[in-house]
Length: 112
Image (tube, rainbow, N blue to C red; front, top):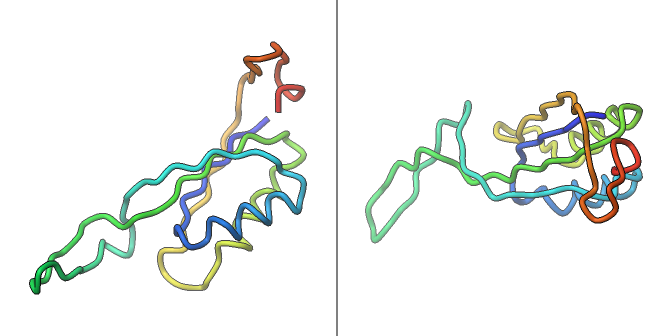
């Protein structure tokens, strides 16, 4: 089992969600986050003045998948979120030791 964390643009969320469903990944968690990378933030206008904003709004997706589904999930996320522009995001994949479904007590792959 693996956890996939993807930091994507907010505008890509619906496309990524649809693509994950299309490849059989039926659950994920999304959080609104802020961060910066090569974009180094951006400049906004507030009441006529320019302000440098150090963090850019992003979405953090967390998707737990079976080991055999990692490649198709990563491909779905990167394919749907890719615009070719700086700030499209990043995908991180790491192993999960254990998963338990609270309602039924199912464990590991059965809990996914």
